[in-house]
Length: 220
Image (cartoon, rainbow, N blue to C red; front, side, top):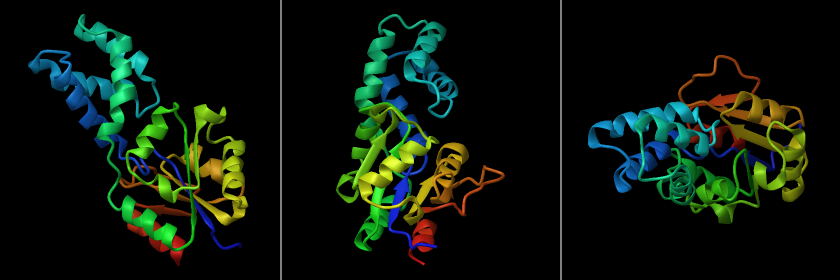
């Protein structure tokens, strides 16, 4: 088995604590615009999170349904979507330990990369909010390259950009299909980031609940 030379990360719910970030953004948006009466603000946030389906539904659909449900007339679907695209990155927070682990891996000589399914430049802006760009030699967002995890080609593209072989990489992500199975099919090792231990079965080589555990596995 070849030693690990490169570490690839997913973005949403791996580096980015998307759940917390989304709640922070929505709390701001529902108050700043304002969208609904005070008594309906919590309901608006909860319904948005339900419709969002952990990021699987793009926000034009979400806002369209929210406008209908809460009878919002002052703001259009496009205005709310534009706010989401432009302002979400201001509320992005990483999981505990991300900064220190990334810095430690970089200083130890590992090449670092990001592979994210999502919109461009929305996902790039969210990643840039962490200030970690200088540590990464490859940042790939699916819409920008016309590929999506778990397609093998997107993992191979990352390898090309970092000048490594798949067997020299480990992929870290929270999605069993997109991240773990996607990496496995090209010969990468994998780590499932599962802080709530909610995935009953995984094909990943390792399962961790925090970033400190990731560091221990890679540097052993």
